[in-house]
Image (tube, rainbow, N blue to C red; front, side, top):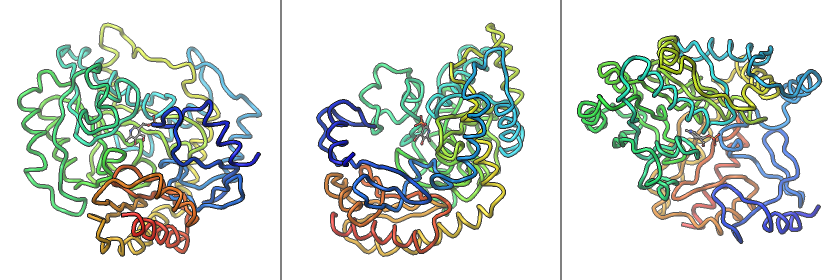
Length: 427
Ligand code: PLP
């Protein structure tokens, strides 16, 4: 099938993420993906700078992950999880408990990152009811935050600037604290904390939990903040008997240079959401982990059980490939690889700082960001990036990359060279 035919058929019937009917935004037909490259139907090869939105950390078609899916397929593709259990789910849960911050002891499997946020919010509400604090029904969330596209997840995204502001009036009414403005390498200041402190002091009697993205605010901002902020928020939560939910869906499994971003701050959240890279990008799966205290509190609520149970919970194929992906990560020199990707991103993106249309260039772990003064024109920059042989998907004023950890420094340099050239030509 020629790419243009496929694109035409697609445009007639298919929605894309944040897409419009009759969209004429650039769309590229991909035929296959292997290693760190995507092959388009017209034969062009693109170096993948996106890891399919933080997920494909090992690249594509990794033999170990292909094998894990095939082996599991030979046994069982899916089975309901009510009243039944299976090895892939139990082994993955044991592994997650072992590698996540201490005291996270219970694992709830779900189908995506957004749903793991829904689950976290429900856990927090049920926990507070179970502990005799039923008035604590609101969440305190951070401006510029992004937590997903389902109703609960949308309700804790930034209501003014976020992608979901159209729905704000229909969603649960939560509290929004200003985001820290200091960068990852800066000391945390009292100013960074002031709004969280003020809102917790004034409203803790109605707050069930604080939810935040640890250290990296992703889709809402692509900004990195000081780990000390998280440490102090942990202390504030303890002081006010408010739970801390860490959304590690984008940051989990090594992306920031630590296995989980909470480790930069040395804290354990009460509830943690993971997804994306958990399956190595192979299948859709998320998980919500919580402490024994949270699990006990949830079950002490009048329901006596946690009231959630998706049809595809703990899908065996997804669980098997998740376990294989995590074991593959841990068996290799992932810290060195992420550090090598980081250094190549930092070196390669540095020249962008001198461009007149650029206000900031920043890197952390295997993430590199060019922030432009004005929004980039996607209809111009996206085809240009493809012509330069790379797959990078900018949004707003952000041209950023989070490549697979297995991309070698020379390839990262090609990627960053294309990003800088595209930004120079279009801003
Ligand atoms: N939370 C964060 C921090 C994310 O970056 C995302 C997705 O980008 C989500 C939640 C939602 O995950 P999903 O798209 O798998 O539903």
